[in-house]
Length: 261
Image (cartoon, rainbow, N blue to C red):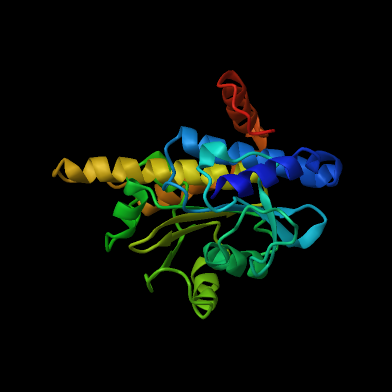
């Protein structure tokens, strides 16, 4: 991203808050917070990967990061609005990568409930995605995904629109997907839902890599216990009532993060 484009974008962003709806601005702030949390927890791959969010009241319009920004540089004003095919809808000089939206657009189009989609290439996530057995039910974190995660075979860099049909087939009705030899993906009705699933999926992968590196036998709970635990996670979520997300936003405030700029 050159300096001229950055300066043009800064001028445009100075008035953005007053040119978008309250709903869009709130969505921008929430999504930008997610990018900063992703950076805080080390779930980044330089300027690559994306977290996308459907704009409230605009079913075919989405927010996504500008291509060339680190996650810690993303804020509410420099998120870019795109359509379902990844085409920019505004006059922001910052670029997006349409190819990077291939995976996101496929799931957004097929799953209206998937308002937020989160994709990562972390070392632990890719390591587990490269194992034939996939995610093992060996930790409480992993049991959250028992019988609730899909798998998609690697077909190369996700640039081919023909792959979208198979991505949709493989995630099905799940909110988590392991892209084999590639990485992790989660989705949710809210930014918080998608982030929480990714945080626990990433943690489950880290635990699995550590446990398998020890070389000793692993302990597996029974299928009955695994199913019960997964159901417990679903039942407890309404009780949590976004307490975790509010705590994470307080973390960003203490770090003086400028995600809401």
